[in-house]
Image (cartoon, rainbow, N blue to C red; front, side, top):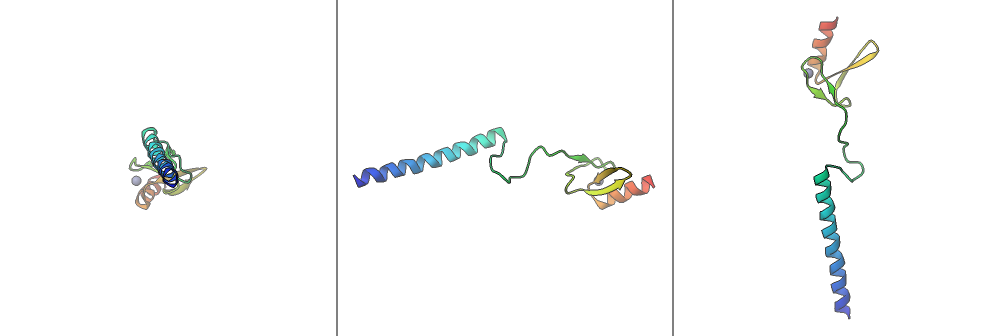
Length: 86
Ligand SMILES: [Zn+2]
């Protein structure tokens, strides 16, 4: 009887591993992260007007130009833009 219970537990354990890998596979196939706190995909990128590089707004170097904010990949680009618009 004890052996049967052990076997049952082993089956449950293996089934769990199996479903976890299936989940991981589905996640990989659909490209949809199921885990919370994972980095968001499809975040809107902004274009650096100087060199044309797309940058993430939260990581970009910014310059407030009148009412709008302009995003740059680096301080060098921001300085170029500032020199151009000044
Ligand atoms: Zn740039």
